[in-house]
Image (cartoon, rainbow, N blue to C red; front, side, top):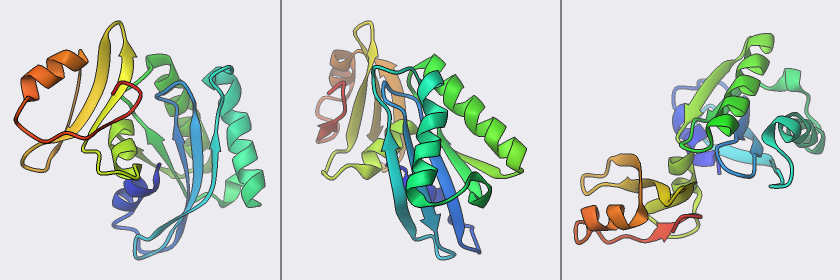
Amino acid sequence: YFKSRVASAAADVSVAMLVLGVDTSQLKAVTALMQVSASGQVDVLSFEEGSISVSHSEALLPLIDALLRKSKKTLSEVDAFSVGVGPGSFTGLRIGLATVKALAQALQKKVAVFSSLRALALSADSTANVVMENAYQSQVFVGWLSADGSWLEDALSGAAWVELHAGALHATVLGSGA
């Protein structure tokens, strides 16, 4: 999930780094611990996914702890953090961002941010070029590759997106709002 985004964020890395990634933009929080080589190669060492029955504020730190224990690593060994900036749940995003900011500040480490929709699109085992996540109230958060190859995002009804882009590109859609 985080691998593609971390790889692009780490393109200027000249030494190997241990990166802890967090995304709390959706119903389930996800965390990953990744080793990034000096050449930008990303290896996911461990991954933890939360439950929809537990809030991010209750689950995130225990998820990070479980992730580190499973990997036999400590927080002090983490070289940098990455965090999803949505779009998604405002409260979820605040929890993820505040947690990562506090950890990074306490450990004096750097933080890289990424689009949660773009990360989902890049991590998909499919040819999906459009990601739609439920934004509730008959809306979706949608991210897509435009005809010129740039990544775009919007929040609107799924029907409105289809109407705006009908015939403009061949879409294979992924996500909870598909």
